[in-house]
Length: 492
Image (cartoon, rainbow, N blue to C red; front, side, top):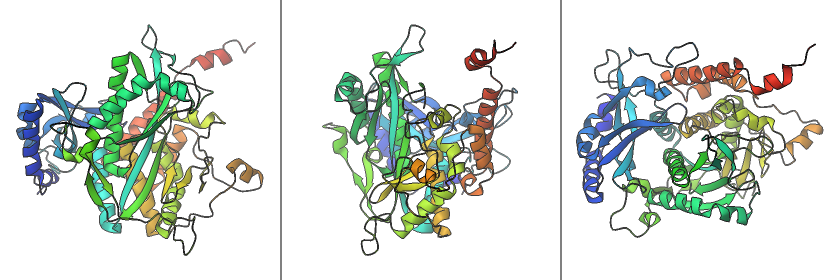
């Protein structure tokens, strides 16, 4: 069987397809977004009437290969990844991700994995390697098979709620940059309560939230889970925020650094590796509904088992276990290349250059140490900090799996945890490698790191590198206001 046929015939999938068909009728859904995620994290796909569900679940839908690169043209006029002569991909839905949109209950969405066309001369029906979501699905499965471990992840999606000017552009934040200020949080209550309402109806278990230290900046956190489901939920959260922004006439800004002099928006990844555990169905998240507004998979979380990052009290009550230390060692070793994925835009590096706001720029780790790129934020997990709000979580999850796997395979030494402020440690003579400070430098590090590149198999690396190298080149051949202000009258 081809990869596509294996997907169609996955054990239990036929029953899930029938259940979705029943749910479409019971919920009154008339239209379905068949969606996947492009190289930049953008949600793309097709909308198709619900009555075609069972046919589409077997045959899939077709869309140009270049949609995985936003059908984007580089500055030389060439399509990134795939030209107009390329075939069309086949998108096949994962039925357990089907969920009704709470703001228009006639519409639902389902996440898809992508395949090469059935009629291709070479590798027909093979998994499309420029499908970042499909890659994470496969890479995590390979990691589980090899190490007997599954990765669980929770993300901290900071973003800003901005006022919209008459020209449609940002006109400052809705609130003042007052970190943890309940009154500023309260000012955004109508907005975040609507976000929470929609989120819970789509299976996101919101566990906490606060006002951060930039204008209109909020963070709402979701319960951690399997790395792929977590990425799907972060993607869903972004869709929800965009919808709420439309309803309130605001801008839901996921750009990392729209303002200098205040904190940027990060998206810290809290990670751990587990043995065992159970899939726990939580219909109560959606509230009291006669018909669950989505498939059980949307309301399922992986819990329990043995967290291999927990300290061994007989050795050290604070130090992560051996697997945790090896994983930290692997991530530290590959931090320069990982930066190209976690800080994936030109704007990302404004976050690193604006000093005094705890953005991590050094390849080190410590306990509760926010001046390092990694910190052990609590027993049993560590926080990867070199990642911002523009991240593609599917690429990031796959790359971190590869880095941690390399650390485990090669028994990599994490080194001593840094207890001091990293700047004080450096003043005392410690040598610490600095992370790349531009997108161009980060892409060079990625090009030289075969482990992290392996998280972008086949055409994925080609598409990512082309897209991001073009972004960097476009920036470098643009005259900005800064150029004019600095050089216009500097001579004679």
